[in-house]
Length: 166
Image 1 (cartoon, rainbow, N blue to C red):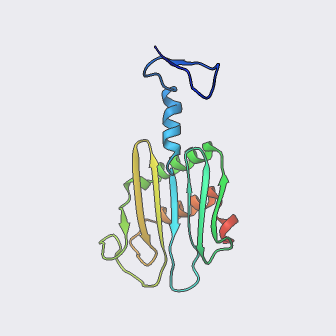
Image 2: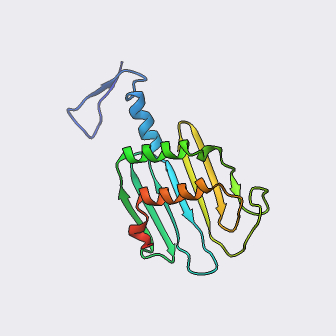
Image 3: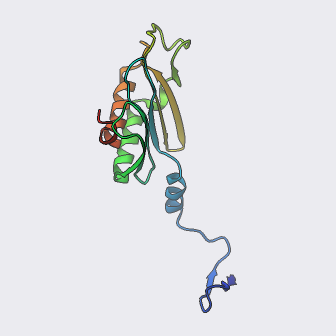
């Protein structure tokens, strides 16, 4: 066992067996909380589309960055229960998010017919050791309908409307 006496904290001693750590599930939660579990970015279009990025950590910390066409410009934060984050991730998984193509944008064959001047949505999720990032140009017609529904669900669960006004 290694012991040390901090110089600035006279009278306090800390002893810890070598290699000890917090319980594994708590350590995993802390490690995972450092990065977003889910994120959604909406890009500009020819017109007044809202441009922002919103993400949530596994612990429920929501971070928003408004860029243009939104009520709140700049950074804001909020909180949702971690259970809602878990439920959102389960819904993404069940709907096939991790099996969709990585890109629905020209010149990819997944795009099919294309219309210019549309915004894009860039969504990402990390769950059960898997990570997925999807670029979805709204000008593409070859996109699974479920992807658009999931993008709206991310906005809904993370509460984007409180900042975007949309």
